[in-house]
Amino acid sequence: MTSPHAFPVRVYYEDTDFSGVVYHASYLRFMERGRTEMLRSHGIDQGAVLAGEVKERFGFAVRAMTIDFLKPARMDDLLTIETDVVEIGGASMELAQRVKRGEE
Image (cartoon, rainbow, N blue to C red; front, side, top):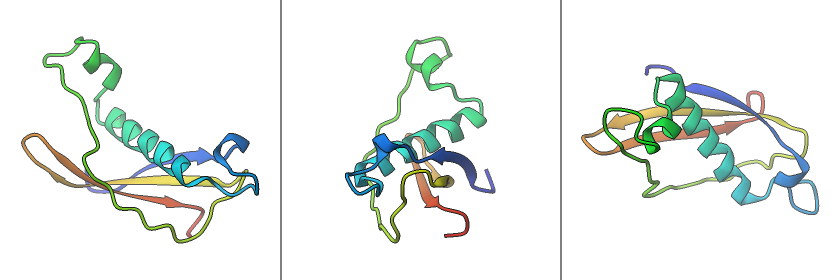
């Protein structure tokens, strides 16, 4: 896992507030999708894991997060959710994620 996983997300009306700017909690959903797709790209199907269809059943829980909001995304923007694996421990994984609009 040397390069960041990239997952495209289009901003829809449901993701925004009354002014067309992405509501802050919507970024959490975008990043959850990015993490899920990064795991899927490495052969980890969370649905199969939770259903007990793999060797050992396990799950993922977000323990902590720090978010810096730099620029607002708006309705119809095409964003890219980049997910980097920073560290993998015995029962933990630290990820770094970025939400980008083009090169921003």
